[in-house]
Picture 1 (cartoon, rainbow, N blue to C red):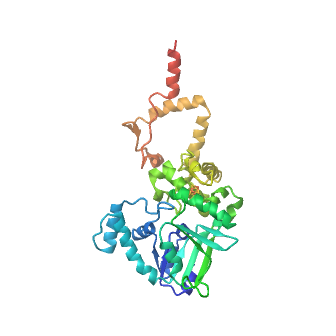
Picture 2 (cartoon, rainbow, N blue to C red):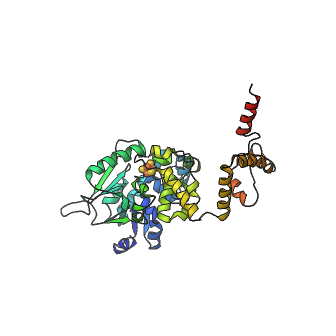
Picture 3 (cartoon, helix red, strand yellow):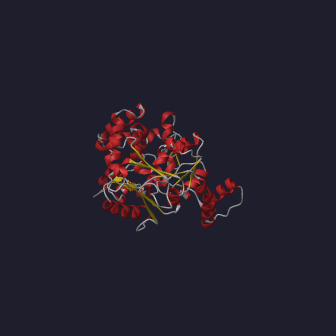
Amino acid sequence: MVDIARRAGARMAVKSKSMATEEIDLNEALEREGITPVETDLGEYIIQLAHERPSHIIAPAIHKTKGQVAELFSRELKRPVEADPEELTRIARAELRQKFLQADIGITGANFAVADTGTVVLVTNEGNGRMVTSLPRVHVAVMGAEKVVPSMTDLMVFLAILAKSATGQKLSVYTTLVRGPRRAGELEGPEEFHLVLLDSGRIAQLGGPLREALSCLRCGACLNVCPVYRQIGGHAYGHTYPGPIGILLTAMLEGTGSVKELAHASSLCGACADACPVRIDIPKMLIELRREVGDQKIAPWIERVTFKLLAQVLVRPALYRLAARVGRVLQRPFARGGTISGLPLFLDDWTRTRDLPPVAARTFQERWAAEREAAP
Ligand code: SF4
């Protein structure tokens, strides 16, 4: 990628939204070569100005309010900016217009590539994608190898599914089909076109336990319905791809060890699988990941011992009842106002950022036994 930019003598690169380039830290690599990357998708532009990473697969700046964006624009552009979405969009458009004209290279992601015609497909709701693919001298599209579909007929099916699940549209505003550089006699388009297919562990998963995740269209529907994502937001996942599918993709790209904690960041409620248009069974694969984390002994030993003990308790009713009674005594110094906080030693990890519910004064089993005794 960087070689292509270097050969083109590029000083500035305009980019349309691409999670694949986030995955390979392309902006940082370009900057090291003295090439200025400029994000031109409105959400990505905001994120770049804020020096942050996207918090959602299709809505990178979803965590920011219009007030925060106005504050950011005022600070970066050194002038007062009103917190009005139309005004903010107009400012970004004016700022970016010159960049499109100055850039030597345009970098995009790709939602699909069609094998039998050699077509790269970009699905966007902003016109920036078309500017990036047609104005600079060189266009580079970067995509995961799993995004290749056999034919145009397959593409039509996926386009309809993607738009509906991502934004509830029948079709996205811009569906751009790119078939290479400008041809003889054509007035528009780049002189050079390059397609970069990323493997990064994807192909190895074709026969692996996470292979279903390769069908992901990156529509973001599973993030929107996930109770964990909705509470903690995308940045808390700490990797390029957030949300339930992000845990699986991170495991695929960076290895199981990188998700030893994230593998548990799911209630396994199944909302993600219900929302997924391609019916990826995310909960099933998360359980598989947890098993792998256990088998490979990646989790800290204290956690492994704790869960082994817990498993022993859970399969022995008498021990479970005894544990509830012991727990009630042990929790006394830490239970205040209906919550447990400030646990000591390594247990502090459990209560540092959240409170735990205490063992009930009477468990369900105790109440049930008492009711039955009292019944006539
Ligand atoms: S896993 Fe399914 S719902 Fe989630 S982003 Fe991928 S295709 Fe969309």
